[in-house]
Length: 219
Image (cartoon, rainbow, N blue to C red; front, side):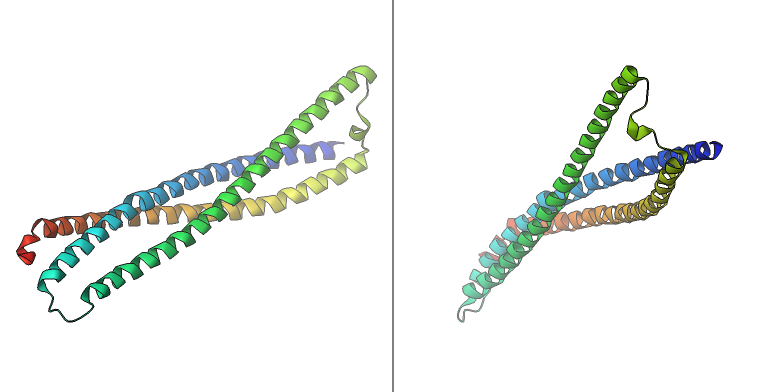
């Protein structure tokens, strides 16, 4: 009997430690999802729009200067337009590819949510079952039949639990390592985001200065 009690105590100790690690991984993962979303929004709604604004002004400046300063041959305007058309075509293709990836991410997040809801439902069913078992104990003075296992069967079940604990522990450690890699990559991407924003703003200043003094080249 003492052997079984010791196994139960150890199983509880391992399972509670495992639960803590699981919640730690989940907390870090949720944090990184939020950071990823923030970086994605800043890159697309912030840096992308600023960069596109720069492109539009570059096109305006380039066309104005070309109208005045190019040695006229043939199809100058068409060649200029082709450059910007190909650029926009490339951007449209990249935007679609990125949106496809985001659709996949959204579907995976929905799947994760469904799994959470399923687990919540399992907890509700477990609690409901124990409420019914409590009523049965009060009425009969005995445990339900499924709780009347022999010492041998209890030990078999405990061995199964301990085996699963070991397998799950290995998976949690791998998960934590992956989350740490995501954290490092997020830090790197955040820094890169700031560098690119700085470059875009520097370009903005040059473009604005050129547009302000456009008359020097076009008059």
